[in-house]
Amino acid sequence: MYDAENISIRSLAIFIAVYEAQNFSVVARREGISASQVSRVIHQLEDALGQQLFYRNTRAIIPTESGHLFVRYARAMAGSLEEARRELDERASEPSGTLRINGPVFFGQRHIAPGLAGLSARYPRLSIELVLTDDFIDPHRDAADLIFRIGTLTDSAFHARVFGEQRYYLAASPEYLRKFGAPERPDDLHAHKCLVYRGAYGPNRWLVRQPGSAWVHYPVTPLMTSNNAETLLVAALGGMGIVLFPDWLVSERLQRGELVALMPDYDCSIHTEPQSIAAIYPNTRHPPLNVRAAIDHYVEQFGTPLYWQVPNSAGS
Image (cartoon, rainbow, N blue to C red; front, side, top):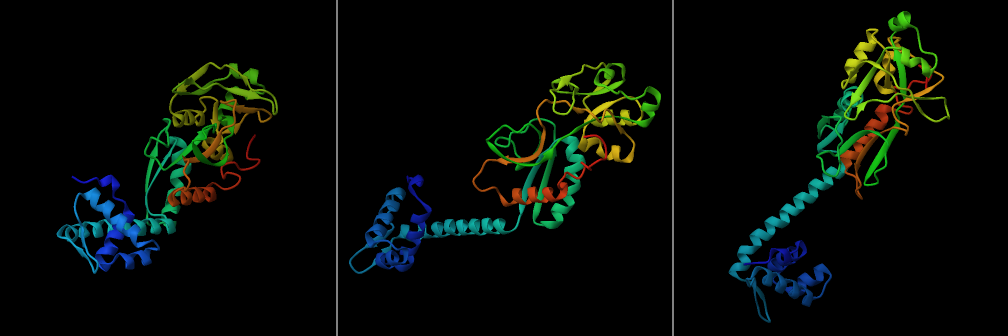
């Protein structure tokens, strides 16, 4: 029975070199070590295998039958290592293989998925897996190479590339405003028809402040709640009520005039802390080329400022 844990890649390389040269001194000069060190490596390998690999005398080093048998496996293992190194070198020069991307559902549909065609065209050897979910994803435990996340970044266990900050708009359709008017102050919200997103922790809180002041929670009585943002957006477009949504979800509707931003002199949010839009990945010394390439692609895709944050399109 042999001890595989004591067999190193270097010992295999020295064994193959001794097998081919049949001389410790020749191998020692080639490896830049002493002949006694070569001899010691072979002894350790023989001890690990429980087999004698060479007959030794003053004139020659002759492989035993075990040596002839083992060299085939040693060469196969060394060849596999070289192939692995070659593939790793190729991946270091051009993104290839599988890249697993995770992101929030609606953000992913609107802003990640449209960029995949360009990413694939730029890196044709890259295979992409996209999973969209609003569940929390841990990059250290879940099968994802790159995670698009919107929120407060506090975990130092991963690297993050921040694209920008999420903003919120109170908005309603022109039809709603014709029927019910627009709230001018936060206190007016309780008298309006509000459409509220309900997540895993309950309905979103509607927070309002004057720029530079503290956030204030203004309770509203929802006309409708839903765990589906698309449903609430459709209802708002149909004139059913007011929504409080992030810019990346409603900016296009605001630019088209299908929705109107309300109370432009106030800041609105559902969080008291700034919400970053970022790509995160495990904290490693050498981020994989696939990850770096994808991040660089989306930095270009999203732009600075973020392409959905068109200046002066609506309130801030």
